[in-house]
Image (cartoon, rainbow, N blue to C red; front, side, top):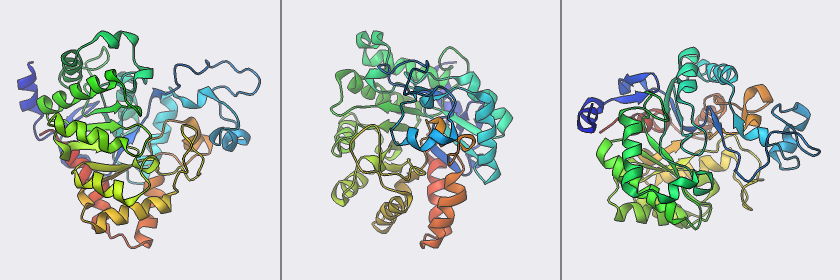
Length: 353
Protein backbone atom coordinates (compact mmCIF):
# COMPACT_ATOMS: atom_id res chain seq x y z
CA UNK A 1 0.00 0.00 0.00
CA UNK A 2 1.48 3.38 -0.96
CA UNK A 3 1.71 6.35 1.39
CA UNK A 4 -0.90 8.21 -0.66
CA UNK A 5 -3.33 5.33 -0.39
CA UNK A 6 -2.62 4.99 3.32
CA UNK A 7 -3.24 8.65 3.99
CA UNK A 8 -6.53 8.46 2.15
CA UNK A 9 -7.47 5.43 4.24
CA UNK A 10 -6.53 7.11 7.50
CA UNK A 11 -8.09 10.50 6.85
CA UNK A 12 -10.73 11.16 9.50
CA UNK A 13 -9.69 8.08 11.51
CA UNK A 14 -7.55 7.28 14.55
CA UNK A 15 -4.85 4.60 14.46
CA UNK A 16 -4.20 2.49 17.56
CA UNK A 17 -1.90 -0.48 18.06
CA UNK A 18 -4.97 -2.69 17.52
CA UNK A 19 -5.88 -1.00 14.24
CA UNK A 20 -7.89 1.94 12.92
CA UNK A 21 -10.87 3.16 14.94
CA UNK A 22 -13.53 5.85 14.69
CA UNK A 23 -12.36 8.98 16.56
CA UNK A 24 -15.65 8.91 18.47
CA UNK A 25 -14.22 5.90 20.34
CA UNK A 26 -11.17 7.83 21.57
CA UNK A 27 -12.97 9.13 24.65
CA UNK A 28 -11.11 10.38 27.73
CA UNK A 29 -7.44 10.41 26.79
CA UNK A 30 -3.98 10.75 28.28
CA UNK A 31 -1.89 12.27 25.47
CA UNK A 32 1.57 11.73 26.96
CA UNK A 33 2.45 8.51 28.77
CA UNK A 34 4.83 5.57 28.66
CA UNK A 35 3.49 2.06 29.13
CA UNK A 36 6.56 0.10 28.06
CA UNK A 37 9.91 1.88 27.89
CA UNK A 38 13.48 2.02 29.11
CA UNK A 39 14.35 5.64 29.77
CA UNK A 40 17.67 5.06 31.56
CA UNK A 41 20.28 7.40 30.10
CA UNK A 42 22.91 5.37 28.25
CA UNK A 43 25.54 6.70 30.66
CA UNK A 44 23.73 5.24 33.68
CA UNK A 45 24.79 1.91 35.20
CA UNK A 46 23.04 -1.36 34.45
CA UNK A 47 20.52 -3.18 36.57
CA UNK A 48 22.98 -4.71 39.02
CA UNK A 49 22.57 -3.69 42.64
CA UNK A 50 25.83 -2.42 44.12
CA UNK A 51 25.85 -0.63 47.46
CA UNK A 52 23.67 2.47 47.43
CA UNK A 53 21.36 1.24 44.66
CA UNK A 54 18.18 -0.80 44.45
CA UNK A 55 17.27 -3.15 41.61
CA UNK A 56 14.05 -3.62 39.68
CA UNK A 57 11.78 -3.82 42.71
CA UNK A 58 10.77 -0.59 44.40
CA UNK A 59 10.68 -1.34 48.17
CA UNK A 60 7.93 0.76 49.72
CA UNK A 61 10.35 1.99 52.39
CA UNK A 62 12.62 3.36 49.64
CA UNK A 63 10.01 4.87 47.37
CA UNK A 64 10.30 8.48 48.59
CA UNK A 65 14.09 8.28 48.73
CA UNK A 66 14.18 7.04 45.14
CA UNK A 67 11.85 9.77 43.90
CA UNK A 68 13.77 12.43 45.85
CA UNK A 69 17.14 11.35 44.52
CA UNK A 70 18.57 10.02 47.77
CA UNK A 71 18.95 6.55 46.25
CA UNK A 72 19.93 5.83 42.67
CA UNK A 73 17.70 3.13 41.21
CA UNK A 74 18.29 2.51 37.50
CA UNK A 75 15.51 -0.07 37.48
CA UNK A 76 13.02 2.64 38.38
CA UNK A 77 13.36 3.96 34.83
CA UNK A 78 12.47 0.61 33.23
CA UNK A 79 8.85 -0.27 32.41
CA UNK A 80 9.01 -3.73 30.84
CA UNK A 81 6.41 -5.86 32.65
CA UNK A 82 3.33 -6.46 30.51
CA UNK A 83 1.40 -8.07 33.36
CA UNK A 84 1.99 -5.05 35.57
CA UNK A 85 1.01 -2.67 32.76
CA UNK A 86 -2.24 -4.57 32.19
CA UNK A 87 -3.18 -4.25 35.86
CA UNK A 88 -2.23 -0.58 35.96
CA UNK A 89 -4.24 0.30 32.85
CA UNK A 90 -7.26 -1.61 34.10
CA UNK A 91 -7.21 0.81 37.02
CA UNK A 92 -7.35 3.63 34.47
CA UNK A 93 -10.37 2.23 32.63
CA UNK A 94 -12.12 1.67 35.97
CA UNK A 95 -12.13 5.44 36.57
CA UNK A 96 -13.16 6.43 33.06
CA UNK A 97 -9.98 6.55 30.99
CA UNK A 98 -10.32 5.22 27.44
CA UNK A 99 -7.16 5.98 25.46
CA UNK A 100 -3.45 6.25 26.29
CA UNK A 101 -0.76 7.64 23.98
CA UNK A 102 2.55 5.83 24.48
CA UNK A 103 5.39 8.04 23.24
CA UNK A 104 8.23 5.56 23.72
CA UNK A 105 9.90 6.27 20.39
CA UNK A 106 13.40 5.52 19.07
CA UNK A 107 15.96 5.36 21.87
CA UNK A 108 13.37 4.48 24.53
CA UNK A 109 13.11 0.82 23.49
CA UNK A 110 9.62 0.79 21.91
CA UNK A 111 7.72 -2.49 22.06
CA UNK A 112 4.74 -2.47 19.65
CA UNK A 113 3.78 -6.11 20.20
CA UNK A 114 3.84 -5.64 23.95
CA UNK A 115 1.59 -2.59 23.62
CA UNK A 116 -0.86 -4.54 21.46
CA UNK A 117 -0.98 -7.33 24.05
CA UNK A 118 -1.56 -4.86 26.87
CA UNK A 119 -4.26 -2.93 24.99
CA UNK A 120 -6.23 -6.12 24.29
CA UNK A 121 -5.97 -7.42 27.84
CA UNK A 122 -6.64 -4.11 29.60
CA UNK A 123 -9.48 -3.00 27.33
CA UNK A 124 -7.86 0.35 26.51
CA UNK A 125 -6.94 2.09 23.28
CA UNK A 126 -3.19 2.62 22.96
CA UNK A 127 -1.85 4.98 20.32
CA UNK A 128 1.87 4.56 19.67
CA UNK A 129 4.37 7.26 18.79
CA UNK A 130 7.24 7.14 16.30
CA UNK A 131 10.44 8.99 15.48
CA UNK A 132 13.38 9.53 17.83
CA UNK A 133 14.11 10.86 21.31
CA UNK A 134 17.07 13.13 22.20
CA UNK A 135 20.48 12.50 20.63
CA UNK A 136 22.00 10.88 23.72
CA UNK A 137 19.52 8.01 23.38
CA UNK A 138 19.77 7.56 19.62
CA UNK A 139 21.71 4.94 17.69
CA UNK A 140 25.10 6.50 16.78
CA UNK A 141 24.44 5.43 13.18
CA UNK A 142 21.75 8.13 13.02
CA UNK A 143 24.54 10.72 12.76
CA UNK A 144 25.03 9.69 9.13
CA UNK A 145 21.35 9.80 8.15
CA UNK A 146 19.60 12.48 6.12
CA UNK A 147 16.36 14.32 6.74
CA UNK A 148 14.72 12.31 3.96
CA UNK A 149 15.87 9.07 5.58
CA UNK A 150 14.19 9.98 8.87
CA UNK A 151 11.07 11.15 7.04
CA UNK A 152 10.72 7.85 5.18
CA UNK A 153 11.22 5.94 8.41
CA UNK A 154 8.44 7.84 10.19
CA UNK A 155 6.07 7.45 7.26
CA UNK A 156 6.74 3.71 7.23
CA UNK A 157 6.04 3.60 10.96
CA UNK A 158 2.69 5.31 10.36
CA UNK A 159 1.68 3.51 7.18
CA UNK A 160 3.40 0.11 7.20
CA UNK A 161 4.60 -0.89 10.67
CA UNK A 162 6.98 0.26 13.38
CA UNK A 163 10.13 -1.21 14.88
CA UNK A 164 10.14 -4.42 12.87
CA UNK A 165 6.43 -5.18 13.25
CA UNK A 166 3.25 -4.59 11.27
CA UNK A 167 1.83 -2.54 14.16
CA UNK A 168 1.48 1.10 13.14
CA UNK A 169 2.03 4.35 14.98
CA UNK A 170 -0.77 6.88 15.27
CA UNK A 171 1.18 10.03 16.16
CA UNK A 172 4.68 11.40 15.58
CA UNK A 173 6.84 11.78 18.67
CA UNK A 174 7.92 12.45 21.19
CA UNK A 175 10.60 14.05 19.05
CA UNK A 176 13.40 14.86 21.48
CA UNK A 177 15.40 18.06 21.86
CA UNK A 178 17.99 19.19 24.37
CA UNK A 179 18.92 22.75 25.23
CA UNK A 180 20.86 23.73 23.27
CA UNK A 181 19.63 21.26 20.72
CA UNK A 182 21.96 19.42 18.41
CA UNK A 183 22.33 19.26 14.66
CA UNK A 184 21.00 15.71 14.67
CA UNK A 185 17.96 16.70 16.71
CA UNK A 186 17.20 19.52 14.27
CA UNK A 187 17.49 17.06 11.39
CA UNK A 188 15.03 14.66 13.04
CA UNK A 189 12.65 17.56 13.79
CA UNK A 190 12.74 18.72 10.17
CA UNK A 191 11.92 15.16 9.13
CA UNK A 192 9.05 15.05 11.61
CA UNK A 193 7.56 18.16 10.01
CA UNK A 194 7.77 16.52 6.58
CA UNK A 195 6.19 13.35 7.95
CA UNK A 196 3.42 15.43 9.52
CA UNK A 197 2.69 17.10 6.20
CA UNK A 198 2.70 13.85 4.23
CA UNK A 199 0.73 11.77 6.75
CA UNK A 200 -1.77 14.10 8.41
CA UNK A 201 -0.63 12.92 11.85
CA UNK A 202 -0.10 15.19 14.85
CA UNK A 203 3.40 15.87 16.19
CA UNK A 204 4.51 15.79 19.84
CA UNK A 205 7.73 17.57 20.86
CA UNK A 206 9.94 16.99 23.91
CA UNK A 207 11.66 20.36 24.45
CA UNK A 208 14.89 20.97 26.31
CA UNK A 209 14.70 22.37 29.83
CA UNK A 210 15.64 26.00 29.15
CA UNK A 211 12.54 28.24 29.37
CA UNK A 212 13.25 29.77 25.94
CA UNK A 213 13.61 26.46 24.14
CA UNK A 214 9.91 25.70 23.53
CA UNK A 215 9.61 29.00 21.65
CA UNK A 216 12.87 28.36 19.78
CA UNK A 217 11.45 25.03 18.61
CA UNK A 218 8.15 26.61 17.59
CA UNK A 219 9.99 29.28 15.59
CA UNK A 220 11.92 26.49 13.86
CA UNK A 221 8.70 24.58 13.16
CA UNK A 222 7.10 27.71 11.71
CA UNK A 223 10.05 28.18 9.35
CA UNK A 224 9.70 24.54 8.32
CA UNK A 225 5.97 25.16 7.65
CA UNK A 226 4.62 22.77 10.24
CA UNK A 227 0.91 22.79 11.00
CA UNK A 228 1.29 24.38 14.44
CA UNK A 229 -2.33 23.66 15.36
CA UNK A 230 -1.36 19.97 15.32
CA UNK A 231 1.89 20.36 17.28
CA UNK A 232 1.97 19.49 21.00
CA UNK A 233 4.75 21.05 23.07
CA UNK A 234 5.23 18.76 26.05
CA UNK A 235 6.52 19.28 29.59
CA UNK A 236 5.62 22.94 29.86
CA UNK A 237 5.08 22.47 33.60
CA UNK A 238 8.81 21.79 34.05
CA UNK A 239 9.97 24.38 31.53
CA UNK A 240 8.05 27.66 31.57
CA UNK A 241 7.31 29.52 34.80
CA UNK A 242 6.34 33.02 33.66
CA UNK A 243 3.27 34.35 31.90
CA UNK A 244 5.12 36.21 29.15
CA UNK A 245 6.75 33.07 27.76
CA UNK A 246 3.62 30.99 28.34
CA UNK A 247 1.32 33.40 26.50
CA UNK A 248 3.75 33.96 23.63
CA UNK A 249 3.93 30.20 23.11
CA UNK A 250 0.15 29.88 23.25
CA UNK A 251 -0.24 32.71 20.74
CA UNK A 252 1.69 30.62 18.20
CA UNK A 253 -1.26 28.23 18.04
CA UNK A 254 0.47 25.11 19.37
CA UNK A 255 -1.04 22.84 22.00
CA UNK A 256 0.39 23.52 25.47
CA UNK A 257 0.82 20.27 27.37
CA UNK A 258 1.15 20.09 31.15
CA UNK A 259 1.99 16.43 31.48
CA UNK A 260 3.62 15.87 34.86
CA UNK A 261 0.43 15.71 36.92
CA UNK A 262 0.96 13.60 40.01
CA UNK A 263 4.52 14.83 40.56
CA UNK A 264 3.81 16.80 43.70
CA UNK A 265 7.36 17.41 44.89
CA UNK A 266 9.45 20.46 44.06
CA UNK A 267 12.48 18.19 43.56
CA UNK A 268 13.24 17.32 39.94
CA UNK A 269 16.22 15.04 39.36
CA UNK A 270 16.95 16.09 35.77
CA UNK A 271 17.45 19.82 36.33
CA UNK A 272 17.80 22.41 39.08
CA UNK A 273 14.27 23.77 38.91
CA UNK A 274 11.37 23.96 41.35
CA UNK A 275 8.57 21.77 40.07
CA UNK A 276 4.97 22.96 40.53
CA UNK A 277 2.31 20.86 42.21
CA UNK A 278 -1.06 19.96 40.70
CA UNK A 279 -2.80 23.01 42.18
CA UNK A 280 -0.25 25.28 40.54
CA UNK A 281 -0.70 23.43 37.26
CA UNK A 282 -4.42 24.14 37.40
CA UNK A 283 -3.70 27.83 37.92
CA UNK A 284 -1.63 27.77 34.71
CA UNK A 285 -4.53 26.12 32.90
CA UNK A 286 -6.97 28.74 34.18
CA UNK A 287 -4.74 31.55 32.91
CA UNK A 288 -4.64 29.95 29.48
CA UNK A 289 -8.39 29.36 29.39
CA UNK A 290 -9.21 32.90 30.53
CA UNK A 291 -7.00 34.18 27.71
CA UNK A 292 -8.90 32.15 25.10
CA UNK A 293 -6.63 29.12 24.70
CA UNK A 294 -8.98 26.36 25.93
CA UNK A 295 -8.68 24.30 22.74
CA UNK A 296 -4.87 24.40 22.98
CA UNK A 297 -4.51 22.59 26.30
CA UNK A 298 -3.58 18.97 27.03
CA UNK A 299 -2.79 17.27 30.34
CA UNK A 300 -1.22 13.94 31.23
CA UNK A 301 1.20 12.27 33.70
CA UNK A 302 4.21 11.22 31.55
CA UNK A 303 4.65 8.09 33.66
CA UNK A 304 8.08 6.60 33.02
CA UNK A 305 9.10 5.57 36.56
CA UNK A 306 8.07 2.38 38.33
CA UNK A 307 7.64 4.41 41.53
CA UNK A 308 4.71 6.24 39.94
CA UNK A 309 2.73 3.02 39.42
CA UNK A 310 -0.02 2.14 41.89
CA UNK A 311 1.58 -1.22 42.65
CA UNK A 312 4.63 0.65 43.95
CA UNK A 313 2.73 3.21 46.00
CA UNK A 314 2.44 5.78 43.21
CA UNK A 315 -0.50 7.66 41.73
CA UNK A 316 -0.86 5.58 38.56
CA UNK A 317 -2.47 6.38 35.22
CA UNK A 318 -5.84 7.10 36.82
CA UNK A 319 -4.69 10.01 38.99
CA UNK A 320 -6.05 12.73 36.71
CA UNK A 321 -9.49 11.08 36.62
CA UNK A 322 -9.56 10.14 40.32
CA UNK A 323 -8.10 13.29 41.81
CA UNK A 324 -7.41 16.11 39.37
CA UNK A 325 -10.81 16.26 37.67
CA UNK A 326 -12.66 16.51 41.02
CA UNK A 327 -10.21 19.24 42.06
CA UNK A 328 -10.88 21.06 38.79
CA UNK A 329 -14.60 21.02 39.52
CA UNK A 330 -13.97 22.34 43.04
CA UNK A 331 -11.78 25.10 41.62
CA UNK A 332 -14.44 26.38 39.23
CA UNK A 333 -13.65 24.56 35.99
CA UNK A 334 -16.88 23.56 34.29
CA UNK A 335 -17.50 20.17 32.71
CA UNK A 336 -17.30 21.54 29.18
CA UNK A 337 -13.78 22.82 29.86
CA UNK A 338 -12.73 19.47 31.29
CA UNK A 339 -14.25 17.64 28.31
CA UNK A 340 -12.39 19.95 25.93
CA UNK A 341 -9.06 19.17 27.60
CA UNK A 342 -9.49 15.43 28.10
CA UNK A 343 -11.75 14.49 25.19
CA UNK A 344 -12.17 16.98 22.37
CA UNK A 345 -8.58 18.16 21.94
CA UNK A 346 -7.15 14.61 22.07
CA UNK A 347 -9.80 13.44 19.63
CA UNK A 348 -8.86 16.24 17.23
CA UNK A 349 -5.14 15.54 17.49
CA UNK A 350 -5.47 11.77 17.14
CA UNK A 351 -7.61 12.09 14.01
CA UNK A 352 -5.58 12.00 10.80
CA UNK A 353 -6.29 14.96 8.53
